[in-house]
Image (cartoon, rainbow, N blue to C red; front, top):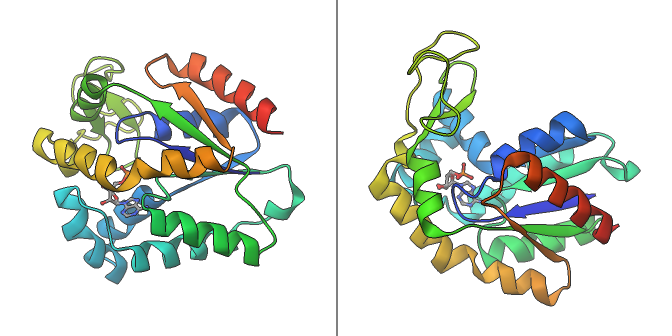
Length: 220
Ligand code: AMP
């Protein structure tokens, strides 16, 4: 099954993805994570993406769409129907959504459902600006909702936690504006296709996971 997780930055797409992967037969394609990995490793792709990401702008479609198919085509067992492929952070523009549909057609596949995270502005700001990540192992924390045992230090590997550059307040505000201007049109796009399911993204991750399972049942 191919499932898109759609929602603004800080909506909880990455957190839910982790929970789904722990509990179900699922894999995640997060274009944001792929860009961050490439920036860390100073690859040509990372160099292209960095300037856009640091400002909170979108990386151009031609770069992002090719990257998506590269990753998708390398996934194994996706034709068997049991594996859930989670698209986290893609598509983000109408052009990306249409390319995704065309590419799925060419592969005799389809997008089975879109889970839309409904979250208010203040919650998005609190979640993103309070997020801290481990630059070594990738673990994610939140200064209030999920603090590490020792302030500023990763529980898993003892590395000093950092704030993502694009989680600083001004950049987050821009990311939310970009979402409203370029991504939110996808709510209509998928509603018209009859495959969009909304969930209340302000609930706890366990409650959201239960809701996700219910919606998955409705899509099957
Ligand atoms: P995320 O971790 O999904 O919030 O993505 C972080 C940043 O990566 C975004 O603010 C964009 O700069 C870039 N990015 C991730 N996914 C996409 C996409 N589908 N299209 C364009 N840019 C993207």
